[in-house]
Structures are given as structure tokens and as C-alpha cells.
Length: 499
View 1 (cartoon, rainbow, N blue to C red):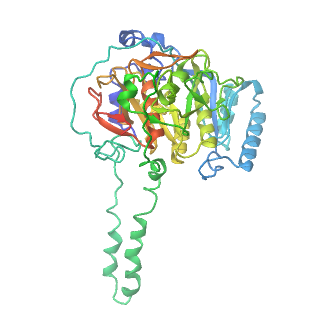
View 2: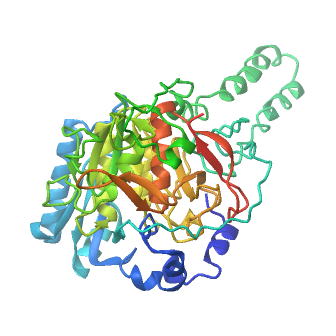
View 3: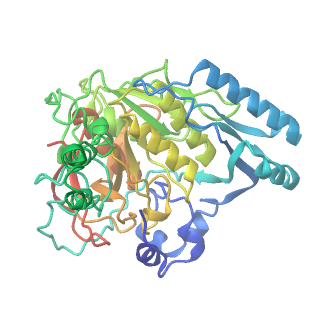
């Protein structure tokens, strides 16, 4: 969780408008000078509220889900949600054309353009939990390398994360809890045993024995251990190492990160779609879908989703390049159109879809982000609680990501990723902060491109997160080899590794 000092640190020296802008992987193609001078002008739409467009969340969200591995909504629950939505639309006089998204699953509700009167009416409705402003997510076209990354050249020896991020072993591997987590106090339990001896002798024989035994079961209650085992179930799973076939390119960042055979494993890429004809990618057509209202195509007309997918899962097939989890199946969840335009409500719909369709051990890559959205954060946390693993880009605004969703989510199974260069220096435009779990290569990265082939796709935390997604596919957890140089906060990020 973000404290006041962390927020003040993030806000210092920054214009207030830039703090709440969308900051996920949108600036990969600009040189460092542009980040420092005119990035606000270039990214004028990032994070802006969409005038008159709101996310409406019903109170019945979440309680209609089955916790049976895949958390699918019951037929009765879906029927009730649809009926409630229809009733609210009718009562508030909302036209069909105003609807932008419908939510059914963990999040139940809709996104729509609303008049002030309709907004006021919905906010007062007893069946509405809350209303949240919808915002723009804009990607920038990747392409030009940003090679001006600098670090302070210093390395620290404290890579063992005993301060609470992850499980704190000597390898630096963690469970995606973020940094600086506090352990829960347990010393209050012995208190009841003190008053017991002071009672009269006759009553002592009977209650004394039950009294100590009651606190004992309460201490190991599965409340704490239970969230951890879910994302960590595949923790010790071995992975199949591979030798790149003749004709394969092994990019420097994949070699540094580590790689293996991801055959049969599934990654859900919430992005701009995918080049469905790319010979280096295994596309799961059956489960891929578009969350863009009125556009059913999953085809990537922008390029970002195809780049991300190649880093994770490019095939070891004798051509193109090898991905971290080579040969894995990619499910494309399209939330950005061909201009790189997206919305928070689309991202929420995509996570809802994952909760309904994915299984424990599957991995989701979210190389996107926004200003604070409780709805998006809650959806990610719910999915992770069911054993689905998340790799999330920290963002590219050089600010504390505690003010960005879903990068700020601290939960088991959720891994927020910063970016570094080939010299293990922290990328100057990468976001930082307590929610970050690992750093991974994100500068001058090579990947698959729309139209076929591979090439340089530039720099950004967009390309760091998929390295961690690949590791999670192979291992179910993330290992570390050292720490990054020049991190901007008090917790130097462990460098993600497959072993």
C-alpha cells in the first residue's frame, strides 16, 4: 500500500497533471530528450478523462462467481446481472447507443456516456456500488531505439529480500507481493492464557485445557498461507530447456533473461491484438477476442500486441526468434484499436474475460496502465487470487507507480516490472516504487512485427513485463540474478531470471 511519504516522493518535481496520466508503455519510440522536454505535448491524451463517459459498478459484483479453478459466472448470476442492467438503463433513460462496455463476471455493470442527470440518478441508486470516470489509454508507436539509458553504476549487496517482497530467499525469487511488506503480528494470541490461571481452582480444570487449544488452531488458520499457495502452486516446476534451431535469432535480452519450452502453456495478452498470420506465433483463435465494442477483429493493426507476444512466446521453429517461453499459446485480448487508442473500461472487460475463461497457472501480460482505477485493481487482484499470474508494466513516466493502476497492485501472483538496459542499468524513463517486484530488459528490444519477421521495437516497460510473463509460464515464479544499477527508490529491483 502507498503511504503519504511515498506519494509525496512521487509528486515532488512533477506537474500534477503528469502524475495521473496513463503511464504504461506508451512512449517506447521517443529518445530520452523527448521524455525530458515535450513528452506531455506528445502524449496529450494519456490518462485524460473521457468527457461524459463513466464506469458503473453494481453491488452484486463478485458474489456470483464459483471458486472452482476457472471462476465462471453462474447462469442465475448472469441472468440477474443482465436484468439489473436493463432495469437501470430503462430507469435512467440511457440509450443503447450510449453503451460502451458491459461487465458480467467479477465486475458487474457497464460503461456508458451519461448526462449529468443520468449520472446523479445512478450514483443515488441503491443497487449501484459506485461510479468511476472512464479514461483514455494511448499507446505510442514503438520503433526507434532509446539507447540513452543511464545508471549510477553502483551495485548493492542486499539482494536477499528479507524485507518482505516475495518469499525472500537467497535467489531473490518472490511471489509478486511488491516490496516492503509488513508481516502480520501474532504475539497478541498468548494474552488469553494469562487470565486463565487467575480463575478459581474448581473452574480451572475444565476451561484451562480448551483455552490454550483455541488460540493454537487460530494461528495456523489458512488465511495467510492460502493466498500464497495459489499463485505459487507451480513454484518448483522444472522447465524444459531448449537449443535454438539453426536459423533462429536469440536476442541479447532473451539470452540474458533465460528461456525454455513453453509448449502447451497459455498466456493472455491484453493489448492491441495480434498478427494472426505471423509464422513465429501460436495464436489461440478459439479463446482470443476483441473487447472493443462494435469491432470483433483480434487483428493487430498497431503492432504493440504482436511485439509483446513475440518476447513471451516466439516459436523455436528455425526462423525468426526464440521467445522466453518458446512455442506457448497466445490468447489475444484486443483493447487498443489501430491507432493505439484504448480505455480503462476495455481493460476491465478483458480482465473480467480472463477470470471467466482462464485456469490457475495461466499467465496474463498487461503492458498497459492508467491513473488510479479501483475497479481495474480489484479485477486483477480477484483473478490473481484464483491462481492466475500477472506480469504488469510499471510504466514509462519516471514516477512512482503507486499512483498507477494496475501497476500499483500488491498481491500474491501480481508482478510489476520496471525496465533496464543490457548493462543492467535502470532505464531513466521507467517508473519505480514499492509495488515493483522485478526489473527486466526493456531497452533496444527485438521482437516479432506485424506483417511477419522480427526487428527492433524500441524501449519501454511494455517490453520488460513480457520477459517476466515468459518466466512465469515456464516456472510459475520468478528467480533473480543480482539487482539493477541506479534504481530510483530505496529498494533496488531484483533482475528477473528464469533460474
